[in-house]
Amino acid sequence: MPVVASAKTANAQRDSQRIYSIAELAREFAITARTIRFYEDEGLIKPKRQGLTRLYSAHDRVRLSWILRGKRLGFSLAEIKELLDLYQVDRTGVQQLRELLRRSRLHIADLEYKRRDLDAHIAEFKDVETQVAAELKQRGLDPESD
Image (tube, rainbow, N blue to C red; front, top):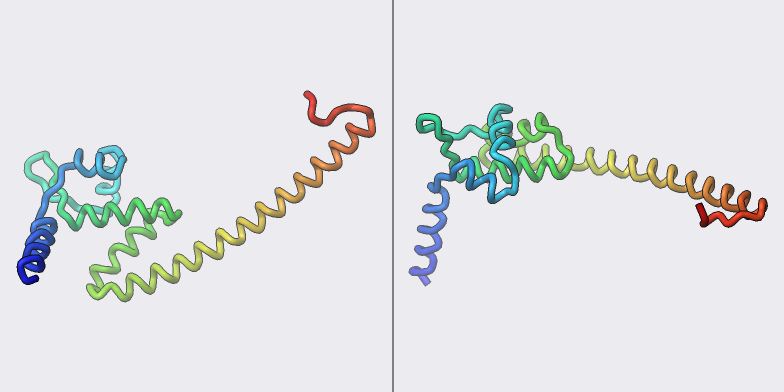
């Protein structure tokens, strides 16, 4: 067992020291290099440079993964940056987790409100649909034909 544990530790250490090119990250996350450069310009990731070449660390890769997940969830870039930067303040991640929980709850409440609003709109359109179809039938017309 110690051999397996030490092999896993060695692999984890090697992965944490791996350097990625912008092309590798773009390919892995199915985004453009321009998108990655944009996140860099916004201060969300900070690759090292070797001349004009950007060198992305495993830490940058993880941050990019979180940025993309945050965007999918509807967080703004400013919110994502604040959440990511909290880890720099508290390396335990507790502050970051608490803030993520708080903001997630706010987003859930907002989405539930929007869902109720959409449901009300859908119900209203269904009422219109029913009334218009009935009026067309009353006039001897087929509501399904154009």
